[in-house]
Amino acid sequence: MKTALVMGCGGLIGAQMTRFLLAKGWEVVGIDNGARAVFFGEAGSVRREQASLDALPNFQHWDLSICDTGTLMTVAKDHHFDLIVHAAGQPSHDYSAAYPAQDFTINATGTLNVLEAFRAFSPDAAFVYLSTNKVYGDRPNDERISEEGLRYEYQSLDRFKHGIDETCSVDACLHSPFGVSKLAGDLLTQEYGRYYGLKTGVFRCGCLTGPGHAGVELHGFLNYLVRQTVCEGPYTVYGYGGKQVRDQLHAEDVATAIWEFAQNPRGGAVYNLGGGYDNSLSILEAVEALAKISGKRPNLTFADEPRKGDHICYYSDTRRFCKDYPNWKIARPVLSILVEMVVALSVQ
Image (cartoon, rainbow, N blue to C red):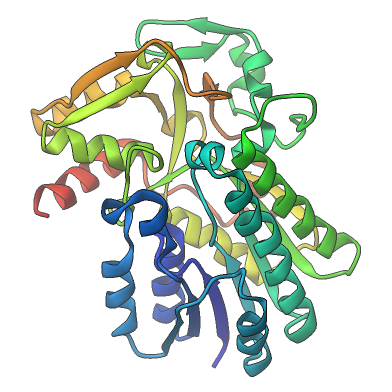
């Protein structure tokens, strides 16, 4: 039986990946210390999801931090892993601004700890690091962007019809401490592939979503917006009049992408992963779509000041990944994602 290590196993991607691998007959060792509740309060907790995983056969959970080097090494020494999925970390742009040292320790030093454990005890495993589009900082804002009815859009749609690709510079731009800490982990993962010859892949993700997301104001935009829509609660839009654009990718489509990479890993590979133009929408477009689906609207408040370093328009160019892994396709269009979340959150 093949064995995987999934870090951040209680979170959106970690839980989805754990279930995916268990369904394929794998054994999964999961690491998650429930820190999301510390970052975001009880509304952001993944403990309920973690408890449901703990009841599944062939799953073993370790309640520890990736900053706990000694215990992490013990877990790595006691198992031989065929696949390692690193989806643990501090995920919020805003939280990092308030707690930059904690953010860097978790996202950068924690990733170094994980890579060292991987190199020492499972060097033939495939390794996937969930990075972020925030490694590009606000560089995408330097492109010519026009304001349209309900969204911002790149003026050169011929050039950007597929979105931002991996050649976008990470230098001389504003990242946020989160963007910097994730970039450190991103570069370390690349280096362990290129310098040490390990089978590491970096996925620079746009917005990842699904009904399993514990969306809160500081993280998980679409899930949180759906939650506030269903209960007709408050939702604050920070800057750009709600016309800022993001692409959305369902957690199931992330799991299948990781699976495809694991079948034929390429050391030091870097891929942008997201929903692309077809799965992109602005906050205002999402509000209108949700109104048609649910008959409800959130109580919107508009703040003039945008979040510092926020993207005005971003969607992912996934052509590099699709070229290397042609069996992967996006299976979940954004409207079906919205319907699924409305249904799931309406019964909670």
